[in-house]
Length: 218
Image (cartoon, rainbow, N blue to C red; front, side):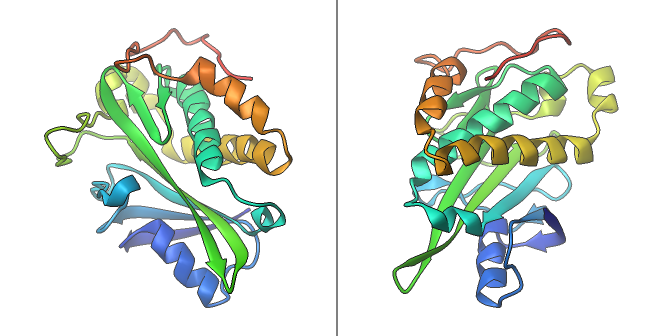
């Protein structure tokens, strides 16, 4: 899958839309940015994306045009994919708070925004934006929202120092793609069933860190 690396963008999802419109993306691709000036979440909320402090990427999937899109299911599948990798690679117990939040230790570790790009009544592509807080940084949020938290705050110093962000990104892309493919292949029930295991409790209860040998998922 083609990887397009960017420095600062308004939003990786918006950048993906522009590249698709310009014909510069024709197959599955990943846009990865160092930071975002106008990162977006659901319901018109902003997503704080300080430079060098997180993972900000969008997965572009024109193949999803084969099916009628269900952005909520694609979002849920992406959340499971992210959580699976963060447990395995970082030892952090991450839960998916439907439909688009990644929560850990009472804080919001990440978020997902899946959008369907439609032109002239035709689905052109699914764009899945993923943001994961990696390093401590100033991330302003509305008072009523869950406070942000980062991998650096959740992991021990030694484990965080050993974390390889490029490897984490590659693993996230593979895992998210695999889970979303279940949706496009008509196996949405598998995603819904997995969501029960990965879902947060009523108040988002979760543990901060798990042993190295913890493995969860399908």
